[in-house]
Amino acid sequence: SLKGKTAVVTGSNSGIGLGVARELARAGADVVLNSFTDREEDHKLAEEIGVEFGVKARYIKADMSKGEECRALIEQAGACDILVNNAGIQHVAPIDEFPAEKYDAIIAINLNSAFHTTAAALPMMRKAGWGRVINIASAHGLTASPYKSAYVAAKHGIVGMTKVVALETAREPITANTICPGYVLTPLVEAQIPDTMEKYDMGRDEVIEKVMLERQPSKEFATVEQLGGTAVFLCSDAAAQITGTSISVDGGWTAL
Ligand code: NAD
Image 1 (cartoon, protein in one colour):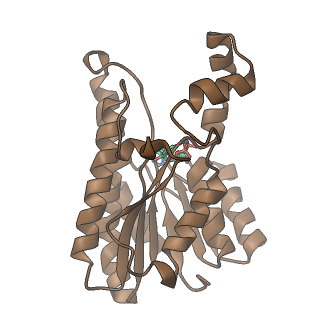
Image 2 (cartoon, helix red, strand yellow; image 1 turned 120 degrees about the vertical axis):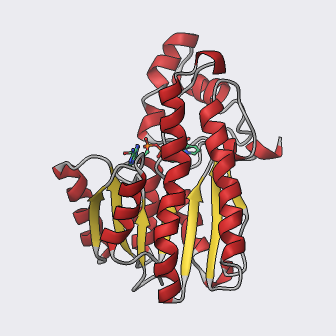
């Protein structure tokens, strides 16, 4: 059980981050949810997790595009035994047309935020004598696709940075790993289905199989619960010697 541990999950008011926070809470961890908004529903999400799983759950607003706010999130959390760097955005365009400010934002949120949160969290993990750094990368941390220069650069970057964190903590009871999801059916992905159906003049199932899951051999989406379960496993004693590596949850994408 993760009772007594505190998990901070960046970008966790929806999608994978929320799924990971829920599974860590189910395993007994207190959780800190985060995003850049400060709405009633954000705090309500945390409250509901607290009630459902009988853990302490809070929502802390912090914009992961800003280094100081990344560090402030960890300071405000007060404890951080499990750090899940999940916040991420995407933009798709050919490199010669890619807006420079989009490029900078993707690198800041998908990569640099993990540098700042990790820097702030490691001293706390050392003091507590235990720690887990779990970075949510992507199949695009290991392979590339056209038109995703910023995303692929950021995700390859975080895979590399995770190895460095693993080496710097190798003699301590702290591990650092990446989880590399393939396509996951989050609300964000679900929202793209109607447009894609229209664009290709296909039905829902055909769009999912032939367009969205073109590179995912299983032809099934990964789920946020599966990603949460992988995070819980990385927090277990069985995973204590797993460090500096990545676990693909991608239905065979990177085996192709
Ligand atoms: P999502 O849009 O549902 O979640 C992204 C989260 O990040 C949201 O909670 C959002 O509020 C938050 N966020 C965005 N900008 C932020 C900022 N500036 N500060 C703080 N929080 C911010 O998308 P998702 O699919 O759940 O993606 C989560 C992570 O998983 C991302 O890093 C993404 O790259 C990665 N991923 C997703 C898929 C997929 O198929 N959905 C596949 C591989 C990797």
